[in-house]
Each structure stands twice: as C-alpha cells, then as structure tokens.
Length: 322
Image (cartoon, rainbow, N blue to C red; front, side):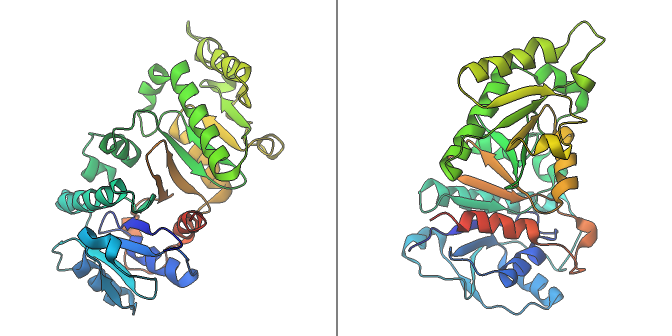
C-alpha cells in the first residue's frame, strides 16, 4: 500500500460530521485509503436523510492488515449504535459509542498499521464530563503522553494556546516557564519534521499591553525570561507581544506561529482571519492526530449547508504524507 490509510472516528453521532465527511469525499480525491469508524446503522440513516448514494465496504479491524480497500466505496468499521431517528439531540447516551470508536482507533494506531488519525467533533459537556479539558487532553491521557500541544494550523499562520479549554480565572496559575519551553520545542520539532523549517515563533503576554498593576507581573517574571532562555538556546522565539496588536497584518506576517497564553486569545483572531481554513493538530502524540476546527454544530443538523473546508484540509494534510 503506497499511502498509509487515514483512520477517521466520526465522533458525536448527532453532529454535522457525516455531512461534511461525504462532502469532503465529493470535493477531492485522496490517495490515502480512508477508513471510517462509525455505526453502519447511523451512517445509512444519515445518508438517506442527506440523499447521499455511496456503497459501503465493511472492514474487520482485527484483520485490517490483510484487507484490501480503496476510496471507491466507504471503508467502514462498524460500531454498534442504536438510533431510530437520523438526527437527535446530543446527550450522554452516545458516550459508550464514542468511547468504543476511540478504543478501536487507538488499537489500530498502536499496531503501527498507520499513524494518520482524524476525529470528528465531540461534545465536551457530555463525553468528557469534566474529566478532561478537551479531546487533546483525553488522547494524551489514553496514550500516556506527558508533553503535548494544540496547534491550530494554517500554512500562512498557526497559533498555539499555552492553556486550552480552561476558565480564565485559572489561567494565570498555569503560566510556567516549563510549559512555555515544552510548547516551543514541540512546535519547532513539528515544523522541522513536516516542512524542514525552523519556525519563527511569537509569544504573547498574559496581561493587556504586557503590563500589570498587581504585585505579580507574569509577563516580566515568567514569560520574558522563558523567551530569553529559549532564544539563547537557538530557538527563533520573540516577545512577549501585546495580544491586541500582534495579529495586525504587518506584525503577524513576520511569524509562522503565535503562542498565546489562553484559548480565546489566539483562537478568536485565527478563526476571524481564516474561518474554516485551519485544522487542529495535536503535537506530541505517537501519531498525527487532526480534527476539523469546529464543533458538532447541532443547530445545522440535516440542513446540508455546513462547510467541509476544515475537514478537507485535515484529510489533505494527512494525504500528503506517505
């Protein structure tokens, strides 16, 4: 097999993923075989609702190395899930089903059959049940990965939040030199591995204008020394920069990546700039994991109006790697 397969976990069954998955396959031809892990019953229900006509090939994951498949049909590993209606409300009723999908995917990835993995959007409220901040942390825990990072990637500019889905009141306590060092090194390794490029990385401050009227100024005491130490170690890091101006065109064009101190500090501007033209890559895992940069979007279920661009970009990124 010239190209390793792409394993795709459909994620939350009551999401727009099925729609954008089929739109993605129609949008572009991929060299890598795509293996979908989902419920056959559910996929058929949603295909009928969305008027999608595509043949399905059942794949036995226990004998996956001896299976022959291409993208002329949907390559499906069937995970049993009973749902009478094509679309329903998101609830904890899907938790076991989603976990079973991840279990199968992780078993395949552990066998080194492939290292390409995509998961559809998951409801943090129901599936994670406050045990993890996000799927990034869930997969890091499942693979016993201690050092990891969330990279929202676009070829023109990427961003990485130092902390992920965390309440703002907790962010300042998590800002540590060690964490900044870890993210920079993971990003640097990723760009060198995939693009043979030593990235230029800008790092924002935590406080407005990198100033604080309090007794503790994290920008001066933590962030600035971390940047200086990394720069002395030959990393292309700069800052700290005020978050309200680093994304101005004349500033952002100087860098490949901007690291922010919290989620919305960098995800809000990157989504404003590129909308769906970005993908969420988890750095540090023993495989390349990508998810489309959007949620289940339950309100758009069954309307056949969702934009597949982020999933197309995710599949294209993995498809470019043998």
